[in-house]
Amino acid sequence: MPSTVTASTPLIDWHALWQVLFISAGTSLGLVLLFTIGVYALSTFQHKDSVVLYRGVNVLIASVSGAGILAVIVWGFYYIVNK
Image (cartoon, rainbow, N blue to C red; front, top):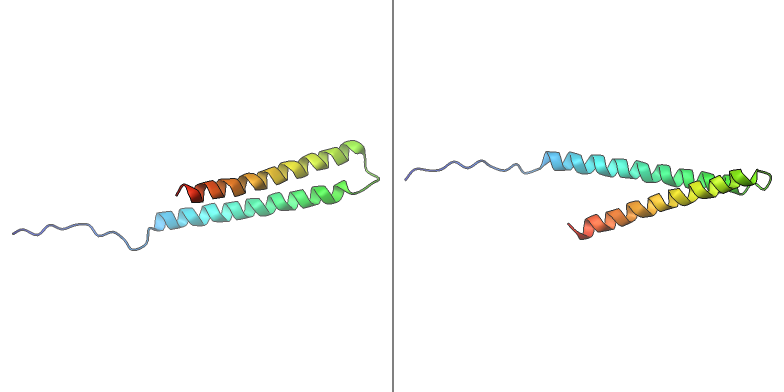
């Protein structure tokens, strides 16, 4: 009876591991950046002597930053649930 040789599968999928590493590092840095921008915008919003338009822009920046953070969290939960 002839023996058939099958290709062995590697113990670690290095491509998937690198992909997870890059996605998690990018997401982490992105979240830290969004949080930093949001906190800075809110702290400059509290200056009472600044122009009203400047304060409004800071509120808009903080809101967009918060929405971005929320979007990343929702995307993460969606990805986890559908895996």
